[in-house]
Image 1 (cartoon, rainbow, N blue to C red):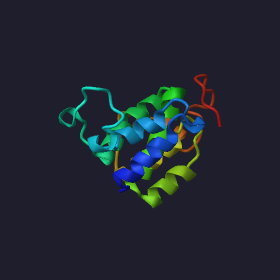
Image 2 (spheres, rainbow, N blue to C red; image 1 turned 180 degrees about the vertical axis):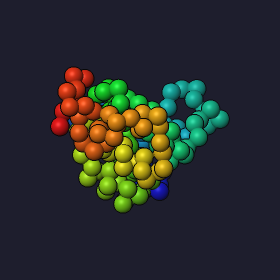
Image 3 (tube, rainbow, N blue to C red; image 1 turned 120 degrees about the vertical axis):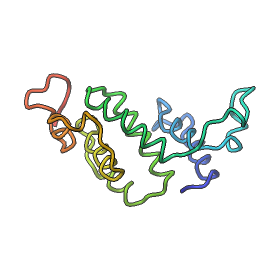
Length: 153
């Protein structure tokens, strides 16, 4: 796992950068930081006592279930957000093999092939994954041959 110093440096690199216009990458990195690493930038009154638990893998695994639902529902911005957050979490976890497989997977449609890599690696199944639509999307295909929700391949 990356050190707090490395995570904070990457967080700072993303501040105001074009590649993180909506702050999704920073959001993921912020969740991986301990209070001592961000005490200089948190709102006044926030203390270490009220700080979140830092367990990046647990956070990512829980978020995967949410992300699969967004992808299955053809939620483009949510899907994009998920992929950006997972990219950062995988970097934090320092799992080169899983990061490589995630990066090499196609994005279209809606990041489903990328999320399928994580679901397989982490042994996660959701009810959406039991559908024919998810099976197709996870392989880079439209959810149906005549999708009118925005799938493209």
